[in-house]
Image (cartoon, rainbow, N blue to C red; front, side):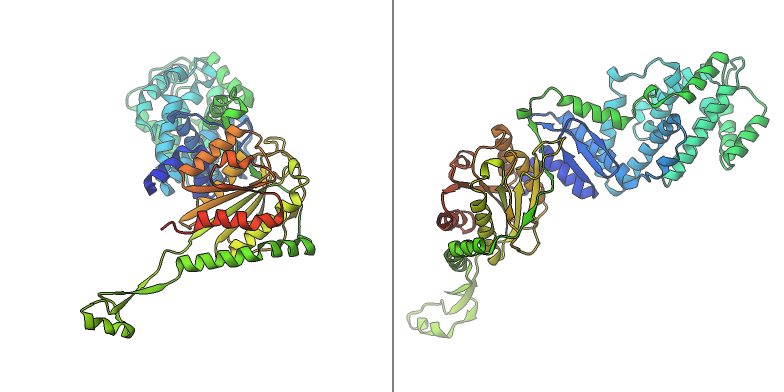
Length: 547
């Protein structure tokens, strides 16, 4: 499999894609549950469908990029200073544009995802703005800001702008002046809130002024933009005073339109349009709302589980059971990767081969031959579900013995137990890392059994941890005693691992179920002494060169 093919499989696998985006942006992305949201630190995606189209992938990409932009670039302390639901809504419109552009500057590839999301939401014929006069101004404001990145929105902006001018002459021009200033200079969330408050100030003024509708003269836009721009340099109180002293046509055409703005200013959050983030998250969640659990993908989350050191007698038993395995395995690796020399027609002169010249044999030079090194990362995934109650002691010893044997050979080792604790949103889909890749080997492998067997979610989590590793070969060794909770979810994860060149092997603890999930690459043991020959067979198949 070529690198480009492997990369394409990763991009088509949503759990792995989400993990890659999370690492790239420096944010945490979780998959599970029924909702899509962010809490300012973590992006939560619902359980994802096994089958999905290109549109759904783009929806997830756009949502992830958008929320990651907020986590990276929004100052959430500024939100605490928001004074009303409407002010928050206007701030969100402006802040969405600001953080997306900041994100696109650092990660140019995200701009395509943002533009796709804009077109999906605002150029869809089924998503035409409503006729509610109370939200007309907000719809126009949103489309105007979004049209800066998507020119195809200009026609809709003009249509809404013309409707605004009927009810609120001059208001659009003054808001455009604020937006023009913001587009040129909006470095942070605090500035964004200041611009939002300037827009709110204009709406308050328009809600208090009314008169007869007047036609806007052609020369008015530039003059009013200059006047509005100069007023932005003043404090809000100064602007209000200057506005009160200004002479000119009122912002609202009649008392009815002034009252519409008054209601808008008093509107609660439930009466305001949902922002793009909320709509996108709801669209993602709705796509899997009626999907059965067997047709969804969940990625396990890290949870708590008490871990203690193995007892001295358990350590001794493990050492005795695997001492021979380590010695034989070390010998096999040494013979397979040992550096040796052979005679050749060129290279360094071999004084022990000079006799070949007597028979006209030119192979009197020494050439060094070295087979490729191991360069392998192995992750051991240990089942500690409730069914392992009578076998957990053997499983813990076996896992420790295998990890130590591999660690002695210089292989990059990781060890994880599943499940951890029960969590309300994802159930038993949790894991407890024992050794992370790069950490030193230790003896804390003793743990209690409990819970179900979420092999699929746990395997997705392990794949997410292994993808960024530098080793050319990546191997997952599953130690389990029975069937997973959901065979289809486990098979889906196994298929994804194979497509991304992560090799899977299994050891069944007093059970042959693993041989059905991973045929020809699994062994079954019934006692600890049986671990050595089983592991030697698996590791020889997995790690030693075939030629």
